[in-house]
Image 1 (cartoon, each protein chain N blue to C red):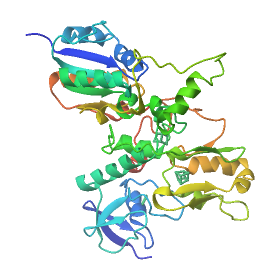
Image 2 (image 1 turned 30 degrees about the horizontal axis):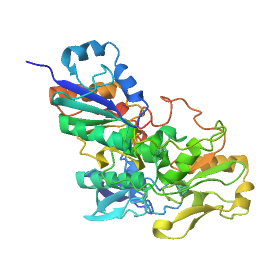
Image 3 (image 1 turned 90 degrees about the vertical axis):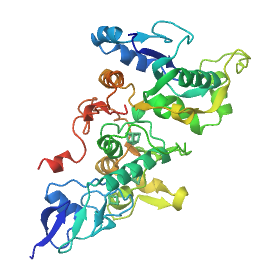
Image 4 (image 1 turned 90 degrees about the horizontal axis):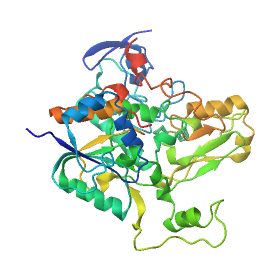
Length: 180
Length: 231
Ligand code: SF4
Ligand code: SF4
Ligand code: FES
């Protein structure tokens, strides 16, 4: 029988949640036994070539490319998991949500303490279009499971993965649910 | 004084006249989740997290006095889901970025959400636009996190009894305002008390954030209310 297939992506996140996934210590050897990694920054597979069982999403959506990646994960993954505060509620990138986008861009590109001379706000068709706000994943597509935390602890990620693989409900003990 | 007999979730309890249901439950080792109420302050009954059923009708346990023969229900699936919904509403109504919050680990709102096992609020985020205000040399107001419990309004006074915090406007526009002159005159102890009494990270004493390491904060290891339940 072929192994369950996992895909992962980092959208508007910092890769901290991926680091936390790697932080499961020697359980990573067990994980490699149990599953096959498909599209993921971990193995650098860039495109979906088959359906996946579990999709792990780090980060919310701050630009249209994030939205496209998230939608393609929804299409290809049976179970989609929002991993970490950014995926669950926007996280620190969403601190900009109360600030008009024009002000954000001007602050970042024209008014930083280190900008010198004639600077511009980058505007090239190659660049993903930035969204008005940073959106949690479940406000864009249907999400099946949520793992809060910044990042979620390795133990929570491990518990969620093993529960999904064994087809049982998550055992969420008090120490596993944290938002920081 | 005559004892009052009542039952809470079927458990016979005794209470003194004048006690609230919340106090009577606590004395019997039963934790009724509460948020806006602070022991020793006059309860404002504003958050409704402590809602129980008294003889079948919903009532706020922090304001409802005990009476002979009351049948109180608290840990029912219906009430627990309602409390959780209220907590979820508070999370989407303000802007709660726990990873960057000085109160994280010591926050009563967060602790309730942990206790209730909240993974994500069921309601859409509002992204309310609120400000951060330096209100005195010692204090910051982070309005994004204020849940309008009014503890500060009630508890923080000048030596001559004047209120420093006050509710302004109404309904969706309600915010807690601060009298800048009175706030500037607060001594260190009262300013620290203001931060301590705020259940969330809305009142911050400047320059002391993140003093206690993760793992040793109030609610890192044991759920809110567990001190009452283990008594
Ligand atoms: S006040 Fe509490 S719930 Fe809000 S951000 Fe701070 S820790 Fe989180
Ligand atoms: S500032 Fe804190 S204590 Fe005052 S009303 Fe807001 S949440 Fe309550
Ligand atoms: S604690 Fe009773 S209404 Fe808030």
